[in-house]
Image (cartoon, rainbow, N blue to C red; front, side, top):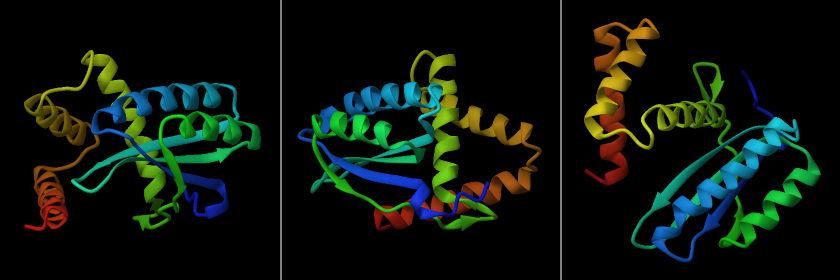
Amino acid sequence: MGNTVSDEWKVVNVFLPSRSSGRKVVKSTSRSARGLVKKKALKDFYFNKYKSKDSNYVKFGFYQMQHDAEAKLSEEMAKKGKVSPGSPDLKQVDGVVLDQIKCSARKVSELVSKEFNGSPTVLQSVYLIHFLLNQLFFSYEDELKLYKIATDGIKKRLGK
């Protein structure tokens, strides 16, 4: 799971006209991207939503995308908001590129959303993460370490 060649990734930011339009952009672009994956015109993709008082945008990452698929998605995203190029995050995390981890997270989120008929609650998410870690053979000590790392990272992002 190296995926370290930046030419294999196309990353774009879609700046949204309103704070409420993010979900629509994600749904429509993801639907199109899943169709391209089925047609083997795109290997994988992810999205991350960003909201602040100054900006509201969605970052999409596409892995091994054919030229005609890129044109189709670019045209679609341009109708939703201002599109600007982004950069792939090729940072290695224990041998796996961060953008590939984002792709895996998207797949898990789609499965969870289907099973829960939407997003799980915060409490359901706690149990979901706990049992996922258990089934991945993490110990309680590993789980505690994971929560500490996550908490520290979130506090840093929030400026606390």
